[in-house]
Structure formats: structure tokens, C-alpha cells
Length: 368
Image (cartoon, one colour):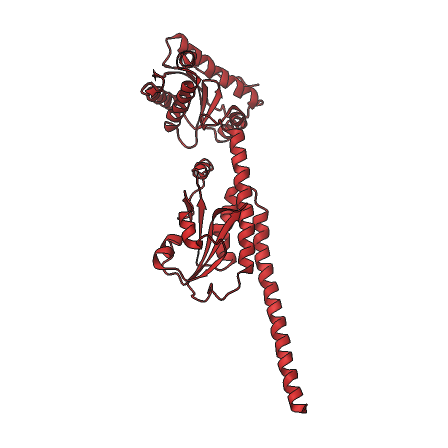
């Protein structure tokens, strides 16, 4: 072979090797970039942290123009969970869908990462905040062969997510995101189940006991009053005896929902046991607490519960209010027990006075 041909072949081979090495180096760089993001996700335990990374951090990390996430909430439990956790919608970047229909139009049953341009209607639904979409990456989030949702990356560039690009890294990211999302949802649901009463959907006694100490500390730290309401359904045993326990359960659920409607977001409502409920009104003077208690009594008194018969429930309410004295309390736990006892005694006074009424009892702080 002529010398000039060998030099030409060697030059071509050298260029190929250099190109291959450059591609390997670039892939390694991309891999490290994706790994850094995935490690962040894998370190998350709470749902809010996972959503923050997917919907906020991802934009900066991957230099995106917008991000969107659609979660499939088939039984509306996710919407309820997010409300209880006070999780917003990230400026419309987070959407809940109650069926698989929308995702099926994106993936047509084949849950693989999809790159490319989107029609105007789809673009506006995926990225309502983006004025102009060039191209998008659609990442299906699948766990145990079931679609959890769909993560969407947007760019104004038509070349950024063109169909000819490799999707290996994005496919891996979709898998990691699905695992982290599923785990955080499971953890939050389990936590909620352990702290909330299944029947009435309000806090249970264990949750109340955990939060009560925090509320006492916060009130003392900020020098703000804390009102405690003890509520008991009147003649509830007669409801169970006359109409059955199923009717009694319906009554408890509707009464709990009526009480909750009259409370602020910062207030704590818990089922304390049986037909008893307790409410903590943060930063609430006794006069305002009485007004809230009276509103609760009135709204419950207007309920008409139908089933095997007609039940018109009423509640007796006791109120006690603590005003921090200024000095640190030596034993907040003991003070909390006394505050609860004071409200409980006021509730029994309401029973003795004829039921379906509010009684307020003066709470005197004893410095331990």
C-alpha cells in the first residue's frame, strides 16, 4: 500500500479514536450530571422534598425553560394528602389527573421517554406558564407496571429534545424519579394513617398529644394565648342503640366535617376518643374562642342526618384559655394536662346545664 494511503488511513483512524474518546468523555460528563440530580432525589424522604427537586431544582440543574408534572390520582387520595400537607401546585406546574386518559394520549400505551415538538394544545396543557415551546422531553413515571404520573421537561429550542437524541439518561432518570415519588407517597400515607382517625379524617389522639406540646411551646415563646375546646356529642349512645353503629359512624363523620369548616388552617382538631373531640385554637383570646365555639355548636345543631332514621346531633362544648404569664413555665406537660382538664370540666358543666351549649371556665396558671 502506498505510503500516502497509510498516512491517510492513520489520520482517519486517529480522528475516529479522538471522536470516540470525546464522545465517551461527554457521556461521562452527562452521566455525572444526571447522577448528581438522582442522588439528590434518592436522599429525599418527604413528598414535598421530592416535588421541590423535580419541579424547582430541575429547571436550574438541567437549564430548562419549564418543568411540568402530572400525577395520576385515581381515588382522590393524593389530593387529600397534599391538602393535609399544605402542598401547593408550584405555579400550575403540578397537575392531578383522576384517570389515565391524558397520559395515554401522550404515550399511547407504550411508556417510554418521548422527545420532540408538541402541538399547541398539548404544549399549553403540559406547560401553561410557557409562552413558546420548541421541544419537550416526556418522562413516564412507572412503578410496578402502573403509571404514577408523567414528568415533562421543556425548552424553547427545537434542537434540545429532538427525536434523534438518545434517551438512555432520561429513561434512567424517569425510573429513579418514579421510585422516589412512590416511596415518598407511601411514607406520607403511612404517616397520615398513623396520625389520623380513619373514620372522621381528623387527627387522632396520638397526633394531638404530639402536637399539643408544640402548641404550648409556641404559645409561650410568642406570648400568645391558646384556647382549648372539649366537645362531646349529646346522647350519642342513644343514636347507636336506636339506629345502629353505622348510623353512629355517619353522624361522627358529618359532625367532624362541620367542626372543621368553622376552624382556621392553624387550628388543630382531633378525635379524642369515642364521641369526644378536642380543638386547639392558636393565638386566640377567650372571647374569640367563645365565638368560634358558639359557631360550632350552631352549625352542628343545624345538621340533619338521614339513614335508617333521622338524627339531629348536638354538642356540649367546654372552653379553657391559657395566657402565658411571661416567665418560662417549668413543666409545660403538667400545664397542658391542667388546661385539658379545665376544658373537660367545662364541658361536663355544659352537660349538667342541659346540653347543646358552650361553657367557658377560667383557667388559672399555677407556676410550678
